[in-house]
Image (cartoon, rainbow, N blue to C red; front, side, top):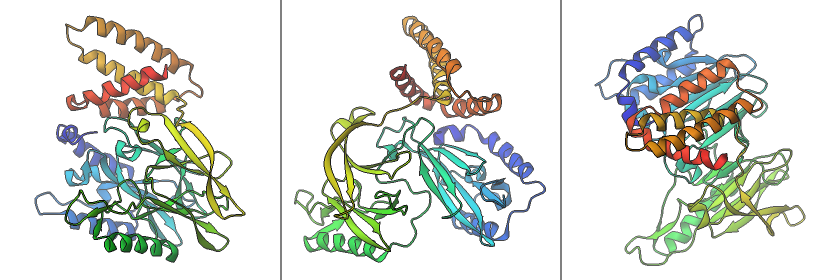
Length: 402
């Protein structure tokens, strides 16, 4: 949802505050969470807005066995410093060892928690995280792992586990292992020795799903946003930074792969470790699916190796929720069609009937409550005039799924 759309909905902020207060009735926001959130609010307070309490942003959810877990929705502050083209900041605090830990703190366009064992978090984030245009959905799913106390990446609601680098991190990565920090320092030294400066991304290294099958998370250093450029003249060639994978091995860490191409992906797989791959940088810019060269773990060598495994990825498996969103956006397009676009309107109506049929046939279907919830979420995403282009782009994508 765009900032412009938030500005047209000041009334909703007050309503949201009331809903938050109702949701937390009978439950008390834990002191450690309240104090941490208050510090965040104070840091953003320039004295121009009414006082906001942490409790007014809070909703209790069930993630851990205790159920004493909390979502903080900063859109409810009415302060657009918490929001941007990628949505508004949400935090998730989960009960752990007598206190609470922050396991998610990022901007999202859409947010939904499904309680269970384990609990599931579905989000829609800025399309840049999928190396796509701003109007393209970027759907991610996380599953709560009680043993590790973290959200783990999972195949999303459309059956896609193709995670474009740099990997989205739900919270700031934990302190880097010594081997990871050494590689970060080495790369910076190489750049500086050449008279260059490092282009810094959000994080110099990111935590990755297990890539070698040992059940432990691994690390990826570098990305397409992190390079080395001349301090004096951009035309001067500088060393390629590329990407380095450091994998867990036994009780330590090992450099598993170093490549100059920074356009990487991690693809999740059911019943096995994730795969590290390099994307075709030309074709990946022009279409949602593109050739990806995957690397295979060689246990004897302790390395990721290129064995000629190339696949066209990702492959989308539309669900009932996918077709419902298509129905919403096509209805939005039809409503916005002018009098001089009768042919286009007839075409859209035909597509809409096809989409409705796919939704009716989808398995598993959405419950009545889930359908109502999703209709509201999708309608709010595309209802502002500034979001019409997004609706049209999504409608075009829906056509390719038919």
